[in-house]
Image 1: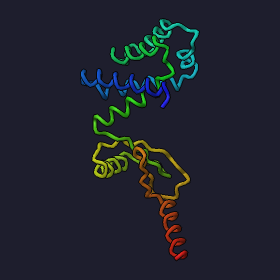
Image 2: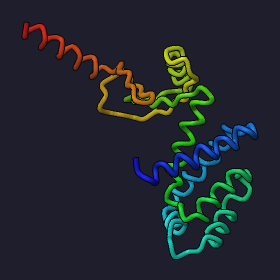
Image 3: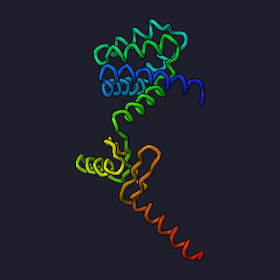
Image 4: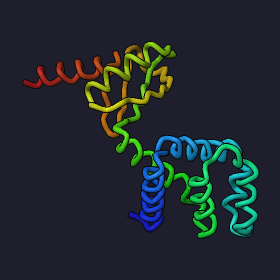
Length: 183
């Protein structure tokens, strides 16, 4: 494990503990996601934030001007601390670790659903309910269109893949047939 990974985990854990004390775990998570998504959408601004020649005070002021009304003091202080310590490059990994810690604490899991067609809200709710019963967690569903699937869905929760796709079923059938021919 690299030193940066260890440091990012420490920042995430510390922020989680503060958010937990304040009863704002989910709020801080959403704020962090907003910051990362905004920075990714504005690549030039993100480069400025990461640039070593720009001082910490200038970076903090830029962030304050952009996010002043949308972030809590806790989230701001964490961002300012990262900038002050010259660890801006850890922001994305720190947010990813925070989301993992928060999801575990709130008994939630993220499910990525791969499907060849767009799912409506009712279908997403049904998937969340079904996999919630399987995992014992509250499932948050995000969908990815995958035209290579012939039909059905694939659901990834953490490191597990639940394959209910037609192409997956055909692959399993092929393996079974090949094994029976080998006998």
